[in-house]
Length: 132
Image (tube, rainbow, N blue to C red; front, side, top):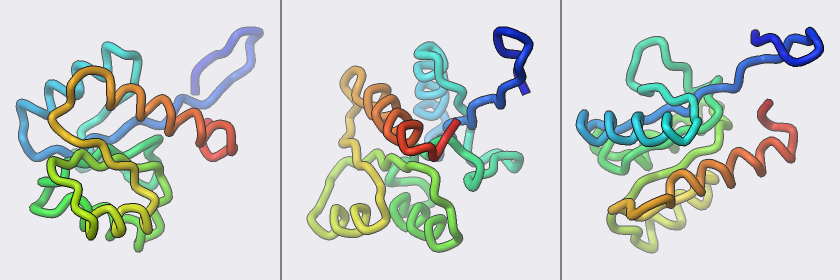
């Protein structure tokens, strides 16, 4: 819990979990998103809890099938907003991720696409009362 103005206590925001198998890419994303003010963690860390995440960002290559990984989390009851980083967004993949309420972002990332998508997703979820 974090102290808020006026002596009230507020809950810390849930972290954004990154699921990226390529360590240099993961480090780069962690650094860039932290600079933009996001609380980010490596989703592969044993302490990371996708059920309590503010958002999940998964590379399509994660564990050989990032979309499948996210779909499996959805089937386990994970409702955290999710973004899939994808190189080739086929029609079949688009149908799969739309059904699982996953936002695609095509790679390579060229600027602020991920930051803007995270802000958009988190704002919509806050407006709906889904995250603090």
